[in-house]
Length: 355
Image 1 (cartoon, rainbow, N blue to C red):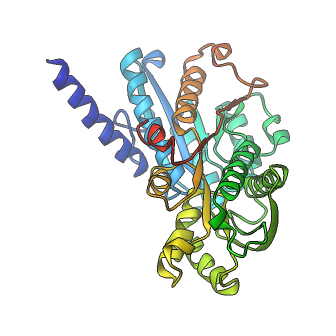
Image 2: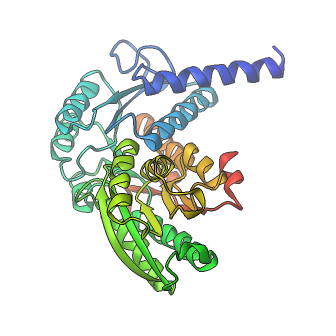
């Protein structure tokens, strides 16, 4: 077989795996987390449950994960069975899915928690069956992760994303005098927050605003809206804010790219001319978010390293399932894999789009 043909087949296989994974089909090799007679060192089973498969960042993360799983399978000769389930934002459903995945014989279960304050049922169930749990993307309380030795977390530091978003906004306000619509030297802003009371929402908002202030930008908060990380909700909430604070909003701070894009959707449908749009910043560096930076709709975004997180989660899952050496993974406090964020503006957006 020629090298070119091998590459084409590999690309086709990856494309199938990514699609299969997001649809909840057993990815990488047939069978998902089914039981059966298998040689332990030849076959491992990874179960994954998502808080919401329609979350853009989570969807892209899963695509990366299935690709890394395919590469790992090829390089090690160990068959990797993956089953991805969607809990549709129901913690009760997610608890039942974890039980089902464990009952099917999964060696490790990865959990994108619906409610970060409610991991007890999952933890107790996993501990009773001695199945390691890797929480990811939505970080639970540190004390809850200490309840059992086989609980882990893969993600990033929410405070860092807020700092970087604040730096992007502050730099833009200082450099672009047109952002200061009323010429008072104060940045009038609104915030699109994720879930009410969610730690990432609180931390991202707090650190974004505080960083702007520490950067020497005087700010005035006009209002905020809870949009639950969702683009459509953000569009509706932004439209209301644009009406309420007509002509006054100079900056829209969104806790993620989906909500930033919802704000842009609302601006497009408004009667505000393009040159008078407020600046918009987001977090995650999703493909659509990066393209919005490239075409000038967003001032910038903060890249959430989905490639690094997916690889870290796959390597940790593989080590736990095969009895590998966790020391090679350099776990923080023996439990955490955290990938750094990065600022992305118009000058370096192509670097991230081409990853």
